[in-house]
Length: 369
Ligand SMILES: Cc1ncc(COP(=O)(O)O)c(C=O)c1O
Image (tube, rainbow, N blue to C red; front, side, top):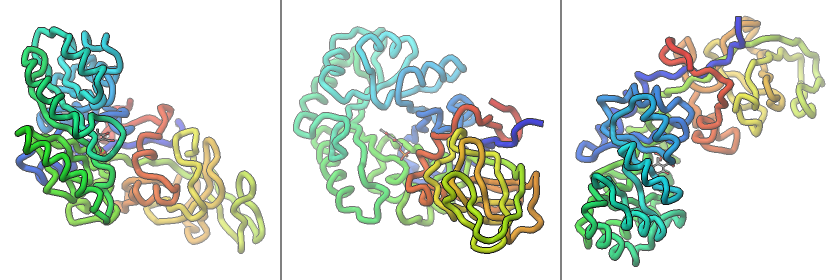
């Protein structure tokens, strides 16, 4: 018998979500974003599950690409932030990677380089995110410099990233889109701009290449769900069990700092999952969890290895009862990671990427990583 906390990863759901992303943009090539260990789901297992479906993968850094290559992944892989130092170009060549170019020092290094084969390159333009990329004023000159080096630069795309594609208010999104579209038209350049919210809600931003990330894992990034986002299926189920039960009278504090105080006789269940597993300590009292498939509420601060839930309305729940922190219960009920994130004043991305290595990942009820 071991600690019952496991992150169950449903690779069929991952494939379903990928098909949804690709189906929403039939004229685009959908590159599966596998950075941050596939948003906490295990990049190698996810890449293998998507083999034959996704023609290309994207990661944040060369170490992530290397791990995929070492596991035998042969599909093209693009570095979303490009190289971090010029000496990485040797690995870009030997691992046969593509890369973004977002700044002058990268441009210089790339143009001075003589790879055996031209490399797929995404020229990153700052259309308004103000994070990475060349300014729109500079982008045309950089595009031309890259085009003039066909021995180095293979397939060239114009890349940008939207700051507010998930928002109900699409004014800033439209502004960014106009900037990048005008540039694409001027340069006759193929576009790579759409992330999950743009794929789900902005067909006008679909380009030659799209970059779905969080939607592949079943999370809906949109401020307001739409028909497409409602078809997403959760990939990770973070599942544990009740390991102890307490019967308390009224007026009793529960957990660190006594944040939760019982207002009536209360049945408290202790769950094997805490912030030492990556569950967010900012979760407020009332954060939903599923016990035996039924919604109940967090009661008290999350501890390192445990948390406490109110089982007063669930007299049948006991030691060994299933607890789902997010995902799908064995009874089939779903608690979305997006909903849990709102109770933690965060987004699904941080919860999913935050599940720590001590939590075993089990894939489709089979192998454990
Ligand atoms: C450059 C880039 N493209 C695509 C993605 C995928 O975004 P999402 O997970 O919202 O689909 C990200 C994620 O942060 C990103 O940084």
